[in-house]
Image 1: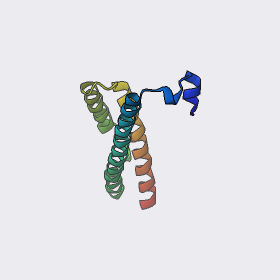
Image 2: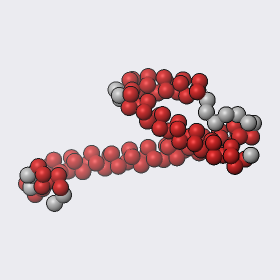
Image 3: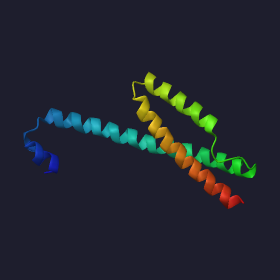
Image 4: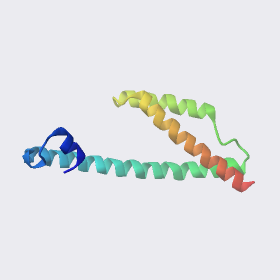
Length: 112
């Protein structure tokens, strides 16, 4: 029995099997989506690594504040259209952008 079962006072064997099956189905979907998100992020970072090498070769700065601002505005609009909290989407993109810039700085330092 996990902690949440003890805390809620719910006996896992007393849960309706239809509820258990639906919960398992939903969790399988969540797991599939999580896997897709990881793969999409990996693809995104492959592209941004290429951008980092291109920028380093041409002595361009790792960050591009204008592009970043446009991307944030674009992502906020996409989030609104998808009924996702735009503030959450912006926080996520800011986290990703910070990681991309860190990669670009590392690439630029290695190519100097």
